[in-house]
Length: 287
Length: 112
Image (cartoon, rainbow over all chains, first blue to last red; front, side, top):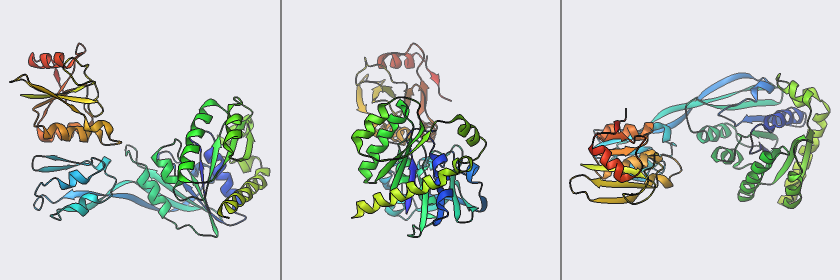
């Protein structure tokens, strides 16, 4: 089972829900928590894993063998990302634009391109507690591309029927979120009843509908804002799986690195029920 | 001398565009013949790498000078390699024609 926790708007409580979901479900199955917010991962502040492994996340970028290159320009032509340019007899490589797709190498008629690793971040893993494995991608500051790291992070482990994978998504509604969502069974959308929360939630619902991924809503900070969220959800037919009331004491505790279920242990059962609902929704969909 | 100027529209009376990679138009002006031609900037439709796409176009036109409001790290690297001179608009630059005149009078600062 693979569940993504996403939101659109930042700061709605994705990590609050994802980390407590991981802790709650550990009594049911082996849980793997993937922090896919590779530009600013923060799940480790709550799950406090003991990291035991760290590997560089490489993009394989082209290196032109000038003695073989005839400056035909084929590599520049096939590069979708403009990571290559031709100036006279020289081919320039722009590593920060390269997605590592390999098209240039594949298409070079002279075999004049070799690929060299370009580290853009790290992949770290370790145990957070018995039955909860923690995996994280971290993009190096100043590197612009998050999606290749997310792709590699997700590939560290194959989905398995007796394991629950939780993907804590980055904020926003762009490529890195789509990469996180790709292939998941369910998306848990954490929102807040504010115009900003609603605006981004609508974008997420559009993406999920295009990707054909079933979803459910968590309304965090319930009780603030306005009623517009309620109206939209009534029309959209997406189930509300959980409401977490606005609570200053909770916010203060979260700010010290405690998790929702540590502050309010009754949420363990509540989150297990949410998981139960998710399995029912997915089960219903498959039939 | 061939100049390329980033512009919001496709004539000499058009407003210049201070963005290089994302300006809708690139105007090629030949100072010897005073002939000019407008091209749609290939960078503008790219999701990424706009600066390189636009720079490649300028290099392919054999321009001697490229004039815009600024140049990003990728475009400027390409122009340094191609030895294309980079010049910047000044505060009083409004239209493409004006940029051309200001270039001829050596009023435009060099991009460093």
